[in-house]
Length: 164
Image 1 (cartoon, helix red, strand yellow):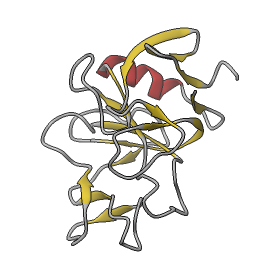
Image 2 (tube, one colour):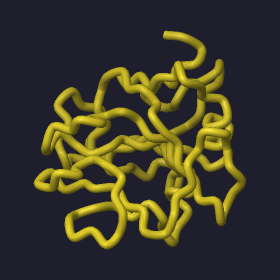
Image 3 (cartoon, helix red, strand yellow):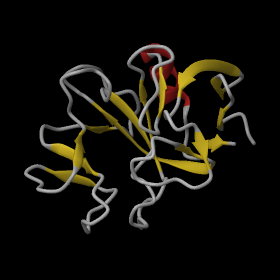
């Protein structure tokens, strides 16, 4: 581990010498991730992207990509674009990245089951804003908005997410 790593502990996400309270998937950590299980996959995951809503915030880093109307994430294991960012209209199961609520205003994208997805092994694990303290996610890691912004500004190419 390095100081640039994000390390999930039972109660927080550790980064840069600080601990940030977080929530994880309702299924808890798992070594056998499956689509729809609500679990957070154990392992060492690279940070491969950052998405943000330019109509709601300034660009958090110079490499962050704006979320546009019609941006979606495929979570349909039967589609060839499974676990990839896609555009509307899209007939298969997906998550809207541009949401009415602020949950995905800032999204850190990990390499879980990406870019060559194994069908049914679970779609992308994001690090995003929480709904409220203690409220579980569908498998992602969620943080307070100000903590998420602080982490987003501090991560680098070498940063990894470590889930034990």
